[in-house]
Length: 334
Length: 304
Image (cartoon, rainbow over the protein chains, first blue to last red):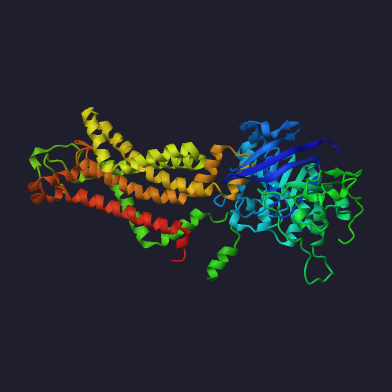
């Protein structure tokens, strides 16, 4: 693996609510290599978005980054001062959101909002920024760029707006693009186009993408490496093909099983029973124990450590810890 | 309908902005257009009129004291034989300028302080809002009277009093506006696009002035019109009480002072009716216009 652009070590982001502490992100470590797409998967409320916001130090009160380090080119983002972090945001690390409709200010034209980031981070004047904006809009594949520059957000469709958002995010050629469920609000065809676009941009500019989603179909499309999160922790991570071929953690297997498969007619989709535990009252043992189909006695006593195999497939599950059970279970039924 | 359709489909070079649309709707509102015309006339009357008038503001002429209206003096003359019409025009200059300037000042103060307190919250918010509360809890007229009395005590030259009146009016005018703006900013800053602005690393001032305040412009415009009216009224009140603009400078307010005198009130109505009417017409026109602007800019009123 190449030198990673960003390395997260033991990140902890806690929310302090009414005297209770919700561990939204707990001991998360991963790194994003140059030019790769890393996907974070997991169901709602498992800490994916908070992880992403933590990378830019944008966790709002009552949230707080309690520990760990986030190294961007070997400099800790958590120790930067306000000016440095401002220079980083939008310039080196950019982000796009789930809802393109609400991510743009309704009272300004697209052109103004694109040039704004350029004016903030580069030394160009208004005219240059405008021209650059037109180029960017062309680059994300929107026709009639000049006309779009003069439009207001309400005049464009969701797919177009998401492209505009991508254009804005790309305006300063960031090294890392964080995409927080960028396709969730879009319909399937537009979704495919946006994914294509992201992949294409990645290939062109060698930018890394941290992609957050709950859609395994999207993961299969775009990811190089997948991280599965559950209740604020990473429970499994592997290169994409490996993960889809040999999912190990019962949660991952559950997720893969609960996808609809084209051509198969089933009355009911498989679903993992139960709910994500309350993040402020996490059990002592494995957080997934209550919902796990292969839960054993030791699972309730200690949180399993992450175990890595030779291929770099890491799983935090006692099933794969030597001496407890032999990790022979493979994806028999996904 | 077909015309509309054709218009929409024809290749527009620039999409119609919100302002353009609002302006069109405003133009359709008859009372708004009418009051805008009246205001336009008032401005011409006050700012261009004196240039045409053959009399000067302080052209005392003892031969024609308290002369009723005729063809040489259209609105008669006052106790010193000065032409009432000319003084009325010059007074309009003062009154309109004071109204507008105090509006601009209180708008600047109010929107800036409101935005800052809404954006930063916490201690900054508490301090600014408490100051606003204090200013709002004192009835404004007594406050103005006290300040004016202090000015007389310190013998501020009459030329400067005009500017000080503006400052005084904006001082009592900003707290209400600051509260309005703060409320707006509080809800606006939680919008997704503000998070997006954070992500893009935009600076604080850019966020406040380029993202938050422009979203409050519709509100600001309405408040601006209405506070111009109240500025003119307050100035008249103060001048009437002899605490604002004082003689020999004329303002609509101090011209009505003459009505205090029972004989002048009964025998010389041309001395006090014109300035009174001028105040009345101007303030009503501004308020009607402000109402129309609010109707136009408020999206919830669109269906009406």
